[in-house]
Image 1 (cartoon, rainbow, N blue to C red):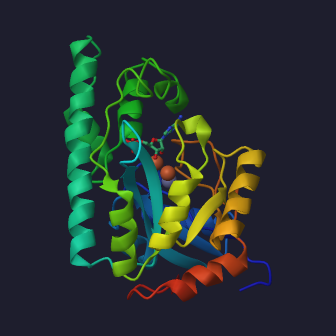
Image 2 (cartoon, protein in one colour):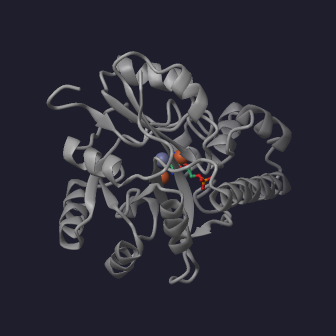
Amino acid sequence: MPARPLIDLHAHSTASDGTLGPAELVRAAADAGLDVVAITDHDTTAGWAAAVDALPAGLSLVRGAELSCRWQGAEPALPLHLLAYLFDPEHPELVAELARVRQAREVRGERIVELLRADGIDVSWTQIMAAADGGTVGRPHIAAALIRAGLVATTTEAFGPQWLGQRYRLPKEDTDVFRAVALVRAAGGVPVFAHPRASRRGRIVPDSLIAELAEAGLAGLEADHEDHTPEEAEYVRQLAADLGLLVTGSSDFHGSHKTVRLGAHTTAVEAYERIVAAASGVTGVASG
Ligand code: AMP
Ligand code: FE
Ligand code: FE
Ligand code: ZN
């Protein structure tokens, strides 16, 4: 690995709401000049095997996931995302919880489509599920259907308040965030709070929660992310320093569902090495 490797620890494939397959994702990561990439699909490890099989020479792969969580300390409960790295993908309780969340996403997605149809908007749940092709289904798949129907021009527009951002938004049955941290640790993995200050996405959690999560086993905070302003990223870096947490930076690449490029934000090698050292699951870093 070079002295200053390019490390991007947050990327999605068609196993959830990205638009590149896992094999295409690792090839795109190599083409982007990355030395390390993490595959972090929402609530699934389904893309891992294909990504490992297609790993180009010289690229290292961190197998991970982005867990849909909620904090019950706000009313209504506040949704948040927990990145989990290098955990045992066969840990029974974690496997069961991921399956439960994916199933709940399907129930919720179908209900969103029912709300749209009740307003005369012609989108089909069957077609949306077919397009998701077995991947974890989410609002980006419904956004794609709205685009196909010519109702909106872009994913960003589909996430506006008139559409999936508010009017047709329903909550998911997410995992309690303290339970998620405990499960990831129990599976030997390393939990990192994704985009914790992204106020443009909606409500954000108080620092007191992040301090409690740090006590409960949270390992790090994602600071450099396209949904953070430079001030928000700096705030996260300071909070992490205060709490003894590591700091990551990542693209949160979703293919053409978003405009951000692989490697747009990166993680320092020291933080990456702390993540690898903290992992005790059976899943080490895979190298191509
Ligand atoms: P869901 O998990 O079904 O609630 O959908 C959330 C996902 O939608 C996130 O993981 C992002 O990939 C995507 N997303 C959220 N907000 C936006 C936005 N404003 N523009 C594009 N994609 C978004
Ligand atoms: Fe996503
Ligand atoms: Fe996220
Ligand atoms: Zn993500």
